[in-house]
Length: 225
Image 1 (cartoon, one colour):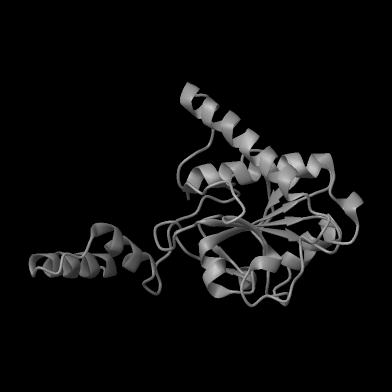
Image 2 (cartoon, rainbow, N blue to C red):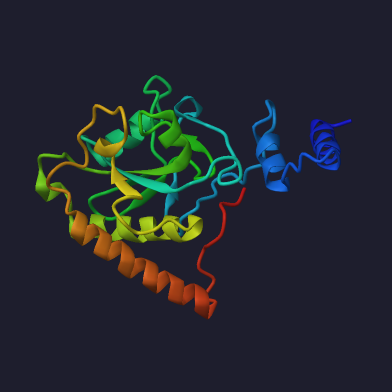
């Protein structure tokens, strides 16, 4: 009998015994079972227009979010290096960290880890499990790093993430790395324009929601394999 049959069969027995274990909880238990791995589509991205470049498997772990972990945060990072260097570091198994996305000063977006998986980006396990991490090319003390193209591309990305998981567009749920409990990082720093960024995210989310309502085929729902 398969591991899934054992788990589901056991769950049915528990429900019959009156404990009332919910089916969504059975799903969470299933995807946390050692050796379970949902099939993936090579090269797939969760954000239209992103280029797929895989981070080293040492810098993230497989999951099935939001079924096994609820996603309710977006964490904004700044690379403190060039776009290409950030991508190189995230491909390095010795780096032991990577974000889901990297956004360049020119507005290009690279997805390095699928949103359903847990990226090692926040320096806090619970926040890694509950968030999507977005790196931005630049330096915290160089305001010229934060270009219009970067803000707009990142805002469209964050709006899509918020729409997919029902994340409110506010400063409680869209946070800087500096705000993660226990972190020693300062990014995105004093020059990151939070009012401008949130306004752009809200505008993008409104446009995306209108497109989804009109049935334009915009990507929505949970991440696919």
